[in-house]
Image (tube, rainbow over all chains, first blue to last red; front, side, top):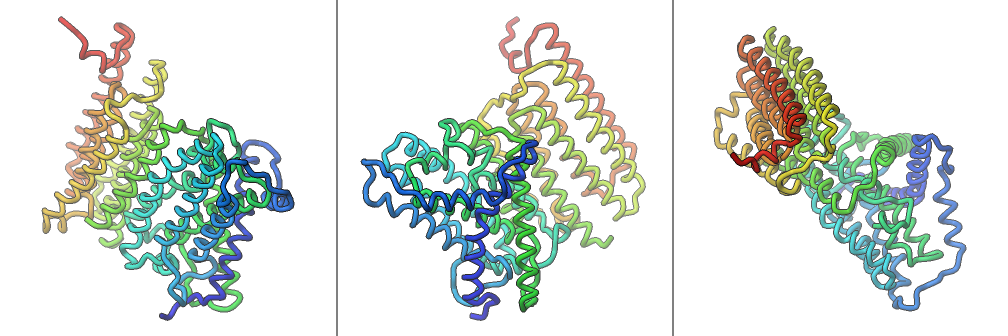
Length: 314
Length: 218
């Protein structure tokens, strides 16, 4: 199998995503602060938080089993593995069989499942509540994400993300098929849900009313919490990378050499920044939805994704 | 513009129209439904302009201009004005859950695509997916009317449905005679005014909405 991305490049991209994950969160928080006329913390704040957490000791609930300790590592591992499937600096299929967009969504679902199991294992009321809510939202989000992937994969004839991005090519909105508009709209609706942001979830608080993801982290502490937070940052940048690969234009794969790689990395940064700005705008302009309103909100995404598939197939 | 480009643009506009339709059906607040229907009319006007450039039909330019002014600006403004005058709750109250309405809307889209696929050669003759999109818009507009309790949201559904008919007529026939289009638009304006006045009158005299009228006894 001949591919455009050798093993070294894939590993490099994965490491890049891990390193840049917290920066995206920091950038979104900074943009939000500026939109709300606040100074806000620096964009490097998530890194400082992580370093602080890694230096602390671990406190664990008495009721938690031995498995609880391994949860953060497993979650982080699943999310980082998902990061290997996202094309960053160069598009095109990898040089070895790696996995496709379905694998990516599966790994993210696995991380979500492990997080929920961990929250239930600790036996806290907050964690259990968060887990049950997260598991209510998840089946509304994941199938729709898959439908969006399928609606673009149908023309490319593959579900491999690098190949999908290469098939998208350099063309921008002008060359979009009608189904792409609806698929992108569905993706924009789902993006706050998948990255755990307003109007579905609130990443800034552990308060009872808003807790979904944060509620599940409440029993973790020290390095374990650090791993979970890093996994959250990572999940966010992976999801944004998925959207960028599916819908945004990509540089052709033949621009080899250091210049090509740098150019690709710059283009990726721009794409992620655009999506981050979108998230910051949504977070600043909407209120958190009541939990029972969330299915209605996600229903818009579902209807858009299904219509996109209908446009593509029929 | 080549015929291929026009095809693509009309198809893309059809997708955007369907998206605004989904927003109208799923809108939790009446203002969002009004803005969505305004956006929809704007897309219809753009479609009219595109078809006008493609066919060289001057009537279509006039129709696109009238659509832009009347349907994308004046009618939403009237609706907005009525909402403000009435001081009603801004949340909309559907008859059946929004999820069920959305499912029905998607079903309508799939069925209309299936139906127009069975038309075969007729579909080839006209502009891309305009026919199934138009049918879906019209029927979903009716659905939006049927699932709403308040008169105002039913008006939004009516305008959306009318947009669907307009889009179908415009793209299938490459522009109807100007006099017919103007007549249709005048009808819509008249209907909107009559309904707006009636809603306000009903509101001020009996303080009831359309959904309460089924409890009337002689």
